[in-house]
Amino acid sequence: MTIRVARKKPDSYQHGDLREALIQAGLKLLSEQGLAGLSLRAAAQLAGVSHAAPYRHFPDKQRLVAAIAERGFRLLTASMREELEGCRSEDGLERLLALGVGYVRFATRHPDYLRVIFGGVLRGGSALPELQAAGDEAYGVLRDVVALGLDRGELRGGDSDLVSLTCWSLVHGLSTLLSSGAVPPPTSAAAQRELVLSALRLLGRGIAGAAPTP
Amino acid sequence: MTIRVARKKPDSYQHGDLREALIQAGLKLLSEQGLAGLSLRAAAQLAGVSHAAPYRHFPDKQRLVAAIAERGFRLLTASMREELEGCRSEDGLERLLALGVGYVRFATRHPDYLRVIFGGVLRGGSALPELQAAGDEAYGVLRDVVALGLDRGELRGGDSDLVSLTCWSLVHGLSTLLSSGAVPPPTSAAAQRELVLSALRLLGRGIAGAAPTP
DNA sequence: CCTACCGATCGGTAGG
DNA sequence: CCTACCGATCGGTAGG
Image 1 (tube, each protein chain N blue to C red):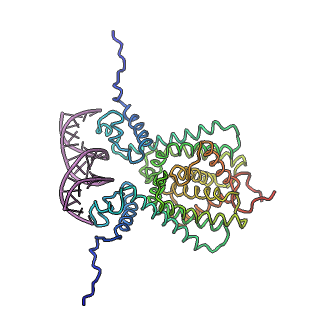
Image 2 (cartoon, rainbow over the protein chains, first blue to last red):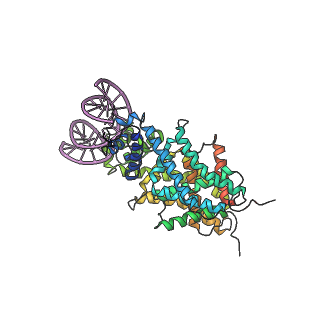
C-alpha cells in the first residue's frame, strides 16, 4: 500500500483552485502594477497556467474583474470590522470614528482595489449577485453602527440611510484625495489617523454657525 | 490682388492647434469610451493626424493625460463657479451648498474626467506645474468660500484647511458613490441636487448628540 | 487545461 | 507632420 501525497507543481492548479488563484493573482497585479496591469493573461501567467485556462472559470475579463472587486469589498469590510473590534468605547460616534479609520487605512494601502470597485463594475443591473452582496455587507457594517447610534440618541440626523451615506461619502472622498496625491498624504499612519478623526469629528459637531464662545 | 482665405481641411491641424485638438479629442474619448479608450493613437485619429504627430506636442502619453486632467480640473472649477454665481444668498453655508452642487453635477456628468484627475497623475513631485495650478485654482474656490464664512461667523470648525478638506471629501465621495453605481443615482437632476444639499446640511448641523427636542 | 492561432491595439522610434 | 516599422500585449476562439 502506498500513501498518495498531494504533489502539486508549485505553479500549477487543478480542480477549483484555479479560480481562487486567479483572483489572488489579480489582486497582486492590482497592488503592484495598478489598474493597467490587470489582465487575464497576466493573471494566468502569475497563476502558472496558460492564458486560455482562465476561460474555464470566467466567461470574460469583466467577470474576473467583478470577482476581484468582490474580494476587495470583503477585505475592506474586514478592515472596518478589525478597527471596530479594537474600539473599546460603546459610544456611537466613537464607533463611527473607528469605522472611518479602518476604511481610510485600507483605502490608502490598497488604492487600486477601490479604483476597481468604484470604477464601473457596479454600474448597470448587470452587477453580479455576489458582488452586490459584498457591497451590501460593507454598507451594512456602517449602517448598523449608525442605526444603533441613532437609536441610543448618540447620533442624530433623522434618516439612517442619509447619515450613513454622508459618512461613507466623507471617508471615501478623503481616501481618494489622500491616495491620489491631490492632498499631501500625512507623514505617518498615526498622523493619517488623526486627520481622519478630525474630519469625522467635524462632521460630528457640524460646521454651520458661529463657534461657541467659552 | 487675391484674398487668401484660410482653407483648412476639416480634419487637419497646423501650428499650435494640434495640441488643443488632441486635448479635446482626449476629453471626447474619455466621455464616450471611458478610461480604457484614452490612447495617443485614438486621440491622433480623432484629430485627423497620423499617430506619430502627437509626439511633436507631448513627449509621451503621460503628458497628454496630464494635460487632459488639467483641462478637466478647469471644467470642474467652471462648474463650481457657475453654480456659485447663480447663488443669490451671501451666507457662507448657502454658498458652500452651491459649490457642492456644482461639483457633484460636473462629476456625475463626466465621471471619467474625475477618474483621470484622481487616478494617479497628481502623484509624485512630478506633477506638471500647470496641472498643479489647475488643482490649486479649484481648491482655492472652495477655500475662499470657507475662509470667508469662518471670518463672518457663519461657519465654524477652526482651521480653514480642515473645514475645506472635509467639505471636499464629502462632495467628492458622494460624486464617486453616485457615478460608480454604488449608490442608486437619483432619478432626476433635481433629486440629485436635493441629495447633495441634504448631505451637506447634515455636515452643517452635525450628527453627534441627541436630536434637539422642540 | 494546453498549444496555436486570430485580429486588433498599443507606445514609441527611424528617417525623411 | 507623414509613412513605415518595431516589439509587446491584449481578449478571445479553435481544436484537441
